Image 1 (cartoon, rainbow, N blue to C red):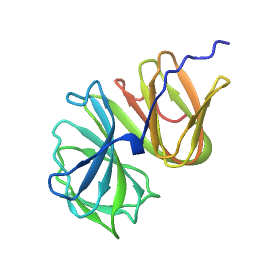
Image 2: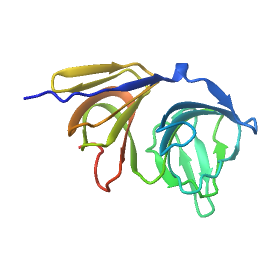
Image 3: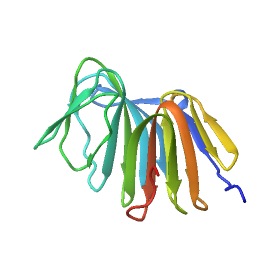
Length: 197
């Protein structure tokens, strides 16, 4: 059986320069943007949030948000309040929604996946192994809070802690992921494709 050829991109959080927010509430580390930083269809960043404040508005953008570390946040929307900690599943919402972020007990580190015109999925995982499938042309990725091992067809990739990795499936993929704590994400142009098996 032919082992699928997989070309992984890896970006360490420590290598992504922090960009300060204009309101002084925190900094953002951009980890990936496709096809470009200036004109993206999807973008992934990690934010260090130091004080309460509103999220920026992104009309036409779908957002996925997860707390990586810290006591957590309360996301205050017009119709609901959602508390989130580093143990909770990520939340999905529209970039058009007005949202105020309140810190529960000090600064947090937060993961943001934003996409336009794509079907996105973001989930939290522990230990494993967990299986992920990606049809042709889907983007499959992981953010490792702790060291993460990916295996497929006898091949393996060790992803350092606090790192993002991703690939575009050139043929159908089945990836096994094993790590103490990580996020798994998929981006697809077709509803119902991608994600954990």
